[in-house]
Structure formats: structure tokens, C-alpha cells
Image (tube, rainbow over all chains, first blue to last red; front, side, top):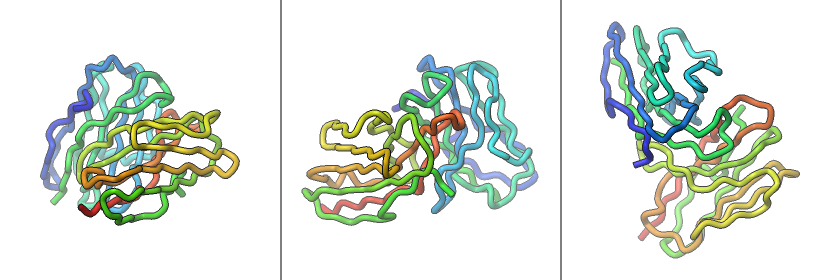
Length: 114
Length: 112
């Protein structure tokens, strides 16, 4: 257990569905991140939040919509996804606004878009 | 192109042998970190080395950093079957985005 919890662990959704991924940490961290991990590709940074404010959007399509209501919770809202969006979605948190300390990752949500 | 790229992509060794993985990166960094990932799971932090450090140890792990060559290596000594996993280097780029940039990873298989 890293202290970062992601739900659900697995999700299968149709291209017309709307679903949300949830990430929660109670480590007292102020920065939270969404990464996408596709097969045989490096982890891709999607979004960064510092003190609940989005500080990075790595040119992510608008069908992915993040939400950070407080420093402990991070959501990724999904709608009208494509099959190529199938991947492992990883949430991470770190103490400060820059990753000059270690990052703590959740176990990920394995997303399959059919 | 990726900031961190690991070499080799895959490595298979016998239990008890040492495993060495290399990482190259392109820009100046504040620190470089190594992570481990078991299949389909989250990443676990192993070790962080700062740009002004050259070598760091943690248990059976030894990490080196050569900022002049923009490279790092991770050595796992006396490997065990439980070390089987993917290993990633990640860089915190100086003046860059406020997040780690990961390489493609090295898949390590330790045969019992």
C-alpha cells in the first residue's frame, strides 16, 4: 500500500458511456497527477494539480476531464472515449508542487473501451 | 522523444546474478528517480539521486548519476526471483514541467 487509492481497479465502458475514475490520498500531499500507461509506451503525463489548481494539461483531448475538489481527491471524468484510450490510468501524488521528492502511485485503473 | 530512455529494454538473468540497467536523458535535471512496477500494477519508488550526487545506495540497489553524460545506472546485486518487474527511470527536469518524465522501462526477468 502506497497510501494512494484508485477506484475502480478495472473498468469496461462503451464509447458512448460516461464514467469517472477516482483517486484519493491522505498523505498530506499537495500535488496530484494523472498518468496514462499504454502497452509498450512510456508513461504519459496527462494532468497536474497543485493545491487544487490545474498547473499542467499535456494536450489531453477534451473527452478526458479532470476534477480536483480538494488536495486529497482527484477525479478523471471520461466521456465518448475511443478504443485507443484503453490503457492503465495511474494517479500519483507528491509532497510539494515539484516532484523533488518521491511520488506515490496508486495501483491504477485498467480501462477498456469497447 | 522521451526525456528518460532505459537500456536494455529487456533483461533476463539467473537468481544470484547482478542486474544493471541504464538510463539516458536529454535535459538538465534536478533529480533522477528509479521506480519499479510489477505487471499491471502501480509504480513503487526505489531511490532518488539529486543532480549534485554521483552515487547512492539502498540495500541491494546502487544508483549512479553522470550529469556530464546525462546518464544513470541502476544496479541490483544478488538478484532474486521477486525482483522480476519493470524498472523505470524518471527525471525531474530543471525549469521544466512540475512532474516526472518517465522512460519506456527495462523488463527484468530473474530466473529461479
